[in-house]
Image (cartoon, rainbow, N blue to C red; front, top):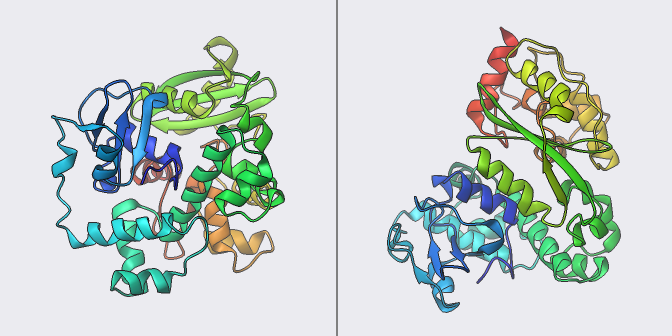
Length: 353
């Protein structure tokens, strides 16, 4: 089963490959069209161009599609003896086969032969996300694939399991980062300028349109950050520049190193009404302080919406400018962070100091 049919969001899979994230070991393989070879996500070989990569749920699926196993990482012999990994793999496959239909956690746990909370903990330990978040990513990936194939918004939304085109337009900012029509055109005609700075927590990519900052991403590999930007908006005119973004970069880097206040910059980000309320509330959190997901939900008048708040934080496209790293779990532990838990803890420690 190729993930282009029942597809986990390619951006998540590509990040796993770019960072050689061992948590995804055994969850998928990637195949390269130019070499006809497929690899494990942790393969030490030179990373391919994103537009030449296809993701498969299993090694045998890649082999059936005509790819041969890499001789360095030996994906055809990757161990799956760990019962926890096997359980997560089978659950992932079951979610992907649901074609966007919600599968209750109770049913997933029963099929996996385990309890609900145990499956949830295992999923988060191995992949860093919950089964529900995995299902959301599958739907987002299917939607992107359908839009790129030229399907209309209504047809693409139905095929991905959203039920209606209006639902997709409502959530376009978190799913696509732009309107469905612009995404289908791969941001054709859009000019995005970007630059990359080196900081104490890694490389920071800052990208902007003429309307404002549209992306702030953090990573250990500058080239991977560039590839991620290119993979998402392959038809946009990307222009690397330093001068025109210098003031924005200085503000962001200064805040990271504790030498400047929070950056207040013009933004070009699309958001639902709910996301806007969450992100504005995050910008009200003082430096050196944190709020829980529950507390944010209460402050915006939506008690009980802690999960939705967490999703809004995860979909934040401009790290640091909207300080989602200041949101923690109810017990005070730092919780997850799109750019790595270690970076989150480092940012909070600097701000507290």
